[in-house]
Structure formats: structure tokens, C-alpha cells
Length: 150
Image (cartoon, rainbow, N blue to C red; front, top):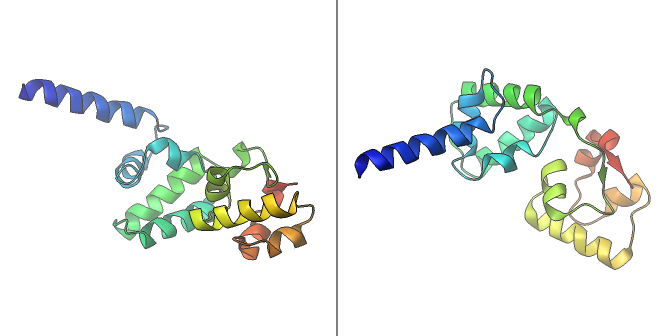
């Protein structure tokens, strides 16, 4: 029975790791990200180095514990293997809560506030309007301006 459990655990570990691109930082990324959520959610963000660093800081704020050197390795790994330029622009008028959370590094409550606002007022037409919307951080919008469409 113990042998079966060991084989099952090993196959699950290999399966999870197989979802990440091979390279320096893969093990650190797998170890840090999968403690709270599935790897697919982590890598779906597709961000530049600054975006990944912001996301990691957010995760540390939520209680993730890791050595600073490991966090830097994870950020570099993610920026290299899951870069922002691999994504199509985010249409803020059709984006889901998960897309807003991941692409604009919003909290769930912020995404929900924005979606309620969008439902109430209709389509957002300009960056000025977007920056005034509830749940939106104007600095984040400005830094990701090239990745946002209406």
C-alpha cells in the first residue's frame, strides 16, 4: 500500500512539474506557486519582469514564505518563460474577473467592483474613464497601457 502511495505521489509531482517550461527556476517556481493554487493559474498571468515582481510581492503579502533569492529566481524564470508579449491585449469591456485579476494584478474585490461598474455604465471608452473606475489602480493601468484595449 505504501509503495502505491509513493508511486502516485511521484507521478503527480512529475505531472505538475511537466506543466512548467524546463529551465533554471522551474523547481523554485513549482515549489512556491503550488502551495496555494494550481500551476496553470500562476503561469496564466503572462507578465513582464516588473509585473511578475508585483505579483510575487502580492503573494508574499498573502503569506507566501520563501528566501528573497528564491523569489528573484522565480521572477526571472516567469518573465523569461511566460512573458507579457505572448498575450493578446486585454479588452477591459469583455474581460472576466480572472483576466482582470491576473492581467492588471487586481484583488478579487477590485475586479468585482470594476465589473459592477462596467455593468452599470456600459463600455469604457478611454484610459481616463478606465482610471476613474472603481477597483482600478491608475498606476497599474498606466504601466500596462500598451496591453489594454477597449
